[in-house]
Length: 116
Image (tube, rainbow, N blue to C red):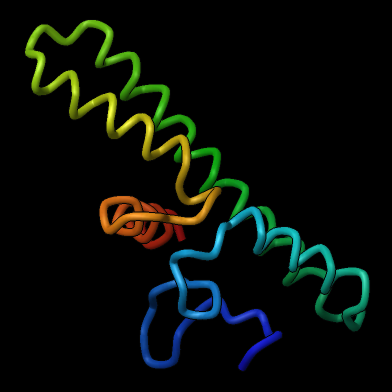
């Protein structure tokens, strides 16, 4: 199914891009914009809404990152502070950019399933 936009893998409700969490949601948005330029008119609304949804997931992750940073600033327990900093760093990266570790992949899938 290469070259086609596949938001859902067969038989699941797990939104993925070509079944791969290593695909950046920004790359998906770029693909959607390519499809929008060449798609049939009746698909315009679908692609526009898909783009809005993906941008909202990215914004949610950015907000989550900012909140974790704020919590880390006032955290007194060093271990918890390190955890919050890792959360903030991860949420700043995924799902907008590709996951490079299991931790990032789980976080990316969580945002997608929670938001969509």
